[in-house]
Length: 410
View 1 (cartoon, rainbow, N blue to C red):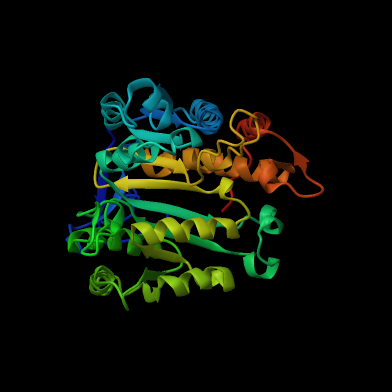
View 2 (view 1 turned 120 degrees about the vertical axis):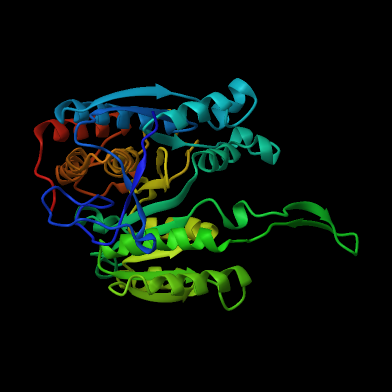
């Protein structure tokens, strides 16, 4: 049965997207201006079904590691997890002729959360658009109605030297990018190919947003910023694009509901520059689908490797979709070279945002930090003086840290 995302109102508590705790002295009153999604998990419910979508390339390798970490963590935390593995992307194309089989989407909708590996590969690059693996991912997001994508970019102390930026620039960076996921130019119509008045072949897409789409992602972003440092930067291109003009207008209007959050606006080209010039100025960023796609990948490299960054995609109800932000890396697939930590951290986000299991999420996050503290590195984050390991061994070391229950970082 799909997990339901509850509604939280008004008062903010330390736990992200959590309802008011027992004996808090607070009785929330419905206030539509302060609605945000939060994971539904009563204290009595400890059984969950997770749909695993390994996908293509390195996907099966990293999902295998994450599944092992979830299984061990769940058993130690008194949680009963069951898994169902389904095909999506290129592997689904080879098996069924479509990138998202109906059976896969149906199974995902019936689960409590969905964990995705990676999608795509050279093999399917020449396919028509509707037969590309990436189309399956877009269909999956739309089918699950997940519109809010949360992508943290945090420079861990253990990896600050892996960043391509100077240490003094990268040290201490902690950014959350909130990306609108189901609107904008990736889904807008009309789109397609044609011929202009001069007979020239053209391709066209439409960047379009409805007011409600902007309002709901704005509230998620403001609530997220409220639980962090209270600063929200909205990124747009309102000096050129009408869709961005509406975006800025609606974001500004919603800000009146959050007087405790400092709102700023920035054009996307400037934001791209500022991310590498002085990234510590950002706390929470909110932006549209295409800008968020680009900026979150840029932010990932500040951390040292795209192989370290997880993401959560949430909707108003139903299961969330959790996945690393990196691609399928077909050039290293099957070679035991992949970094599984982004997927492991995505599993932690699944526990926190998808199932409401905060302590289990903290246990995994602490285990990842402990593994790094002990010097283990995959090739993408390797530096002199650390131990180079493959995907499987990195997973084994994380399991050791999970079992030893290292103290969670505060």
